[in-house]
Image 1: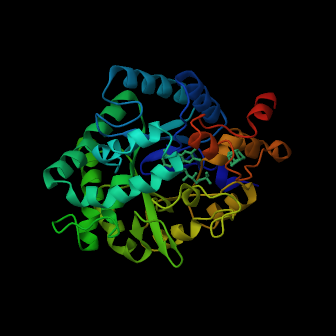
Image 2: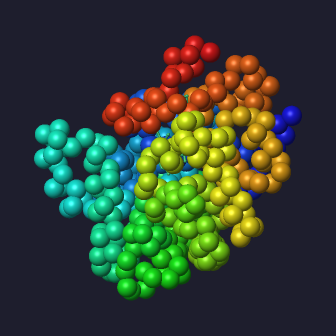
Image 3: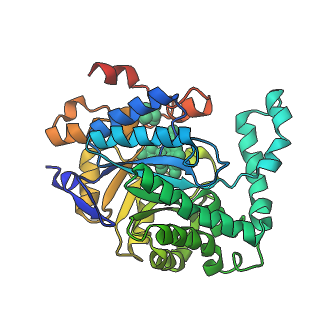
Length: 371
Ligand SMILES: Cc1cc2nc3c(=O)[nH]c(=O)nc-3n(C[C@H](O)[C@H](O)[C@H](O)COP(=O)(O)O)c2cc1C
Ligand code: SF4
């Protein structure tokens, strides 16, 4: 009944055992809890886990590919995930937050005069000047570091890398932030240059590795997402990215609006439906023959099967659904749908846990342990 979900696919040269991918999801959990969560998700039957926000820079936040401790953590992760028959992908990430500009808000945050919700738009205001003012030499150092990070990730045991096309790539792509007058600003070709150079750096370092690209699409009517690529500019960006070495696209809404737009609750006025971002996949599919992975509100096995079987998408990535029920792929394979915990897109313990610095959890956590 779910033949397409359960069928293997050649994804940029890598064989995925089925079409379900754990979307990049930063968890904010202590080491052992995080490793256990990744074990549970890989044991639940998905084909690949994408680890969110792996920093390409030596000074980025989160476990580092450049330190002994960070490498040991990722090696342990690779051992666990591979042991469960699942593949592992590193989302290579460069933040577009200006650390120097952030410092001026520290007293306000510490003194509780600025809440985390108030801090986000303040930091967003800093992105444009930061992106526009970065010296070209520094830009090239950053794009080169995508290649260095990819090499380290491969050495550690990651099977694939995903270039995070949002954050710094996404801000360079968008004329809302990028007001540069050099070869990185102005025309769509110039605004694509940062992302293209990042992908080229990975391809130079690793001629054979599959390179997924998280492609953030901006929508103008109505306006959602500030970074990323305008729908009308996909026809320029995608061929350039393909030529640089991308082997698949992971398509979603662009960032730098509100987090509840890219991780939309069921009550969202525009993206509350099952498969809320798939219309962007349609736009991408019209331009490329490479595999396209959809993400966003994918929870229902019948719906997911229809999208895959109809060729609208080639893979389905899920973040919250696999937090709600890591055994979704296994239960679908066994026809055990009665015991499926369906993500209700409430955002209470996942995004809510992250925002409250409690770590990412789910309202079903207790129940899942018992089932
Ligand atoms: C708690 C949480 C953390 C996330 N962290 C990341 C991340 O590190 N990198 C990223 O690109 N997307 C991140 N996302 C976005 C997801 O990859 C996904 O695009 C989004 O949640 C929509 O898919 P879903 O409806 O299956 O949850 C995160 C989502 C959640 C819920
Ligand atoms: S807390 Fe709600 S939205 Fe988040 S994963 Fe669980 S059911 Fe889904």
